[in-house]
Amino acid sequence: MEEYSFGLANYAVLITMLFLSSSIGIYFRFSGGRQKTSYEYLFANGQMSSVPLAFSLMSSFMSAITLLGVSAENYSYGTMFTIHNVAFGLVTPIISHLFVPVYFQLGVTSVYQYLEKRFGRVARLAGSVAFSIQMMLYMGVALYAPALALETITKMPKSHAILLIGFVCTFYSAIGGLKAIIFTDVFQSLLMYAAVFSVIFVAWLDKGSFTEIWNIADAHGRIEFNNVDFDPTVRHTWWNIILGGGVTYLSVYAVNQGQIQRYMSTGKLVTAQKAVWINWPLVSLMSLSSSFAGLAIFSKYARCDPFTACQIQRSDQLMPHYVMDTMAHIPGLPGLFVSGIFSAALSTVSAAMNSLAAVTLEDYPVYEKVKGKKLPDETSLWAKLVSVVYGLLCIVLAFIADRWGGVLQASLTILGVVGGPTVGLFSLGMCFPHANEIGGVSGYIVALLTTFWIGFANKPPPIKLKAFTDKCSDHELYFNSTVCSSNLRAKMPSEEFFYLYRISYLWLSFLGCFICLIVGISVSLVVNFADNSHKERKDPNMFIPPISHYLKQKCSKLNERSTALMSPEDILDENLEMQKIDKFKEKEESHNNKEELRPCLK
Image 1 (cartoon, one colour):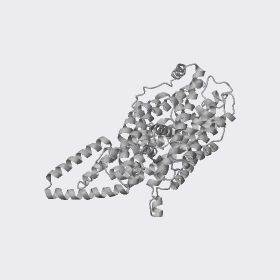
Image 2 (cartoon, helix red, strand yellow):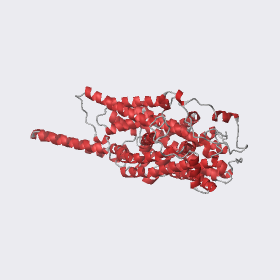
Image 3 (cartoon, rainbow, N blue to C red):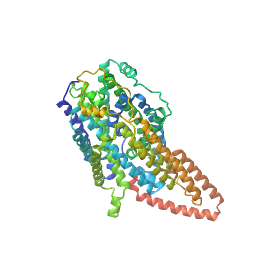
Image 4 (cartoon, rainbow, N blue to C red):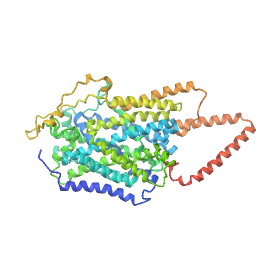
């Protein structure tokens, strides 16, 4: 491998991308309503359309972790990971037609407002705290990944790269609000696709055909789609990918504040549902292209693995290493790739910052406790300040993210540890009318404790497929003592670890969801049996549409029966009472007339 510098042309491409991203934030700061209200800052005034929203949904999930981690996954472990795209397709209608309608029916600003309506204040606080911890950890990994790439390509220290991207992201997120984030996501999504396709295109030119790339991967055992092993310790099988991957996808798109906030920014249920459906092929295209990029990289290094040859320190550096090995002589192309990696991180971190600001202002009543009044909607200053604070926290966490292992598995573990129990709690609330506050909170806490215990325990490292160095030249065998000692360190046999620590990381999210549901349902049944005298009538809008429709019909029939048994005098009194309620509602509606175009805040 020849030594190349990053070069002026590549820096020019990267700086242009960062400038354009910041410019979009500045534009939206001084256009429209100028981000003066919290509603415009956090919900784009409820005016977003489905296509840019779909790109934003995709890019906030498919971060730099995806580009670097998924390609390294397919290179090192094979193609079983691509089955995730089947799981994405299976849960998309569940998200669109079951979960999203509930939020629009209730008109929530924070997704955790639902938990308070359904299970009480404790459930809301527990959910929002768990979400905050999850997203801060995830932001750290999402920011660390592009810094790793920039260090590999430009030799810029990771610390400098983390500070650079962290401050740019904090700047345009803080001044531009959600509208700036969504439109910047569209621009950055295109750069992400360009980065991945540039790798595939160069490999195609090198090998002459996609068939040759596939054949090389197949000859070295990288092609696998049929692992149906029931052993839960097997890293990737159809069962843990469909079940665990499906729950993880639900945790991101069905119960995550960042995505629900985007849905509500449309102001219309139909527009939000359309965005969910458009998002699916966008996510799958990015996932599959990143997977094939891993095979494309393997086609070059099949007999001279850079990791085993000690040319890189982590498998996550494979893609940037390949870029400098094959594209460095083409001015601007490495810069385009780095721009795509940076864009992926910017979109994810900015989305997390904005959603954390919304959760903090809505779910943690600090301002209300100190000032004795609610935060005024007429100012966005507090939302911007909170975004800046989270941006700085993200930078701090990125400095310790290199201790968490591979970026893909680390990120999915973080999502699964909190996401699984959260999906379980929301599913319990939306699908089981008999579930109560004690059952919901008990199930959630037990599930969180279990997933945190298993998820962050000392685990055996995953076993990679065999790599070769027999075709490496003396120049390519880079025996740096520090690098090689970390790459070739002897590992403990997995049998020496406790059994639960050996199960696949993908089972974490499903396990958390399952435990929350089982404990929640069981405790609720016991509590309801013990307190049979108290039967609270629940709002049908808090349940998924099929159950909501059933409860409304049941309520209507009960009202008809009670009316038939009432005397004429009772009916007259009932009618008078209903008239009073109707008059009160009319006054309330006229008082809230200004909120009519803001469904999120009704």
